Length: 315
Image 1: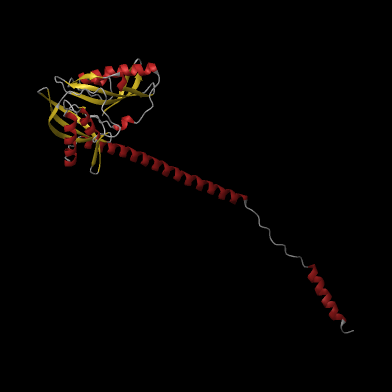
Image 2 (image 1 turned 180 degrees about the horizontal axis):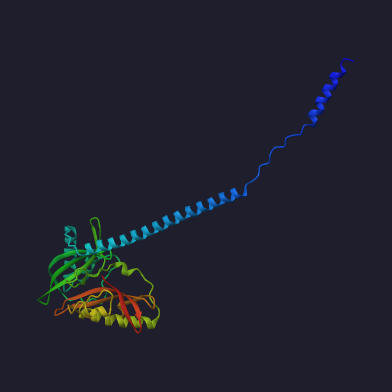
């Protein structure tokens, strides 16, 4: 009987323990207002970031544009500076003296020997036209005026004294050439130049790159007709008079007379609105029997019923 109270106490303890409520973990809730602020801050941050990136990109683009303009400007200044600078080069002087002696000393006979010698000086794709006038001449003297760089092509300008039929004539000629270390090559036919414009117009053998010729007969005929008229005016007119026909005017002012310019020596490429002409002509030094064969290249643009010369180069 003594064990009964103890059992009652244990029972009451177990009952109280079972009646005690269980603690439920508190659920995590989202604060919508706080989330909106976080999203807004994120959007503002992205907007500011991309704004900074855009500003920097525009600044870089502006800087690159300015740098390109500066490079073009400096290249033009360098080209202009080099174009007017006389340079002494014994190697060029020696080479040109030999070339000019062969080119302007035309014997009465042995023409084939002279042509053979000239091939050693000329670029491989340059040859004298078959109808070149080979009037006997002799080079008396040659003086180097300067070496110029125009259109990335070097040219040596010489003052020559050439004798023909017992008469001496003064001539100023430009000779385009290239140089690789100690090797030199004449890349264009020597041409009469205006001594007052010592920069000249430099040409090179790049004229003979096999450009696709125009097949439009009417355009080709019109261009050939214009070319003959232009060349006639070029050799006889002053630089001022040529300003109506070309972008960078130049004229020989009667220093030479046009001897021959055949249709067969006028090649027309380019397009119908912007033809390109490569013509080989023979001029005669005014008042003498001295003949000079030279090549001109005209880049034209169509204007109404005629053409305008946008670029004129000789070689």
